[in-house]
Image 1 (cartoon, rainbow, N blue to C red):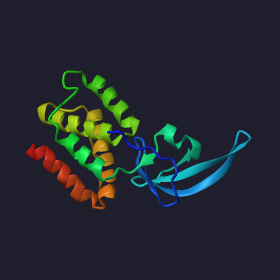
Image 2 (image 1 turned 135 degrees about the horizontal axis):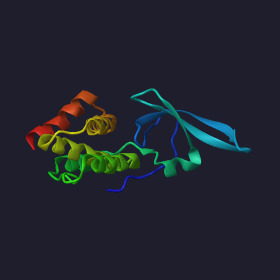
Image 3 (image 1 turned 90 degrees about the vertical axis):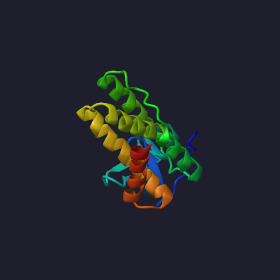
Length: 168
C-alpha cells in the first residue's frame, strides 16, 4: 500500500497535490530565488483552476505524486468496503483533527479511509458542519482521482462509491 513518488513530470501530465487533488502540469519554469536558479512545476488544480508552483527538486518532499494505477484502484475500493469506523468514540473536534491530518498526507489511501469513516459515522450520528465539509472534500478528492485513473466520468465513479455505502 505504498504510493510511488516520482518527481519527473512533463507538461500535460496529471499529478496529485496533497489536500488539493488532481492537477495538470501546465509548464515547467525556471526562476531565480534567493540568488539561485530553480526549476518549478506550474500546476493547475483541476477542480479550482488554482495555480501552484512546486520546486522540481522538492516535489517528493511536498508529496506531489502520480495518479494511482490499476492495482491501487482495487485497494481503494477495498478500503471503501471495509466496515471499520476508527474514530467513533472521540469528540468531533478530535476526529476532525485526525481526519484533517490524514487528508494533508496526500495519500489516496488515507483520504479513502476518511471518506469511508465519515460516511459510516454519518449513518450513526449527526456530523458537525466541519465534518460534513470534510466528507465532501474527501469524496471530491477520491472521486476526481479515480475518475482520471479509470478514464470515467466523475458522476459514474461517485455513483459506484455511493453504491458501496448503501449496499454494504
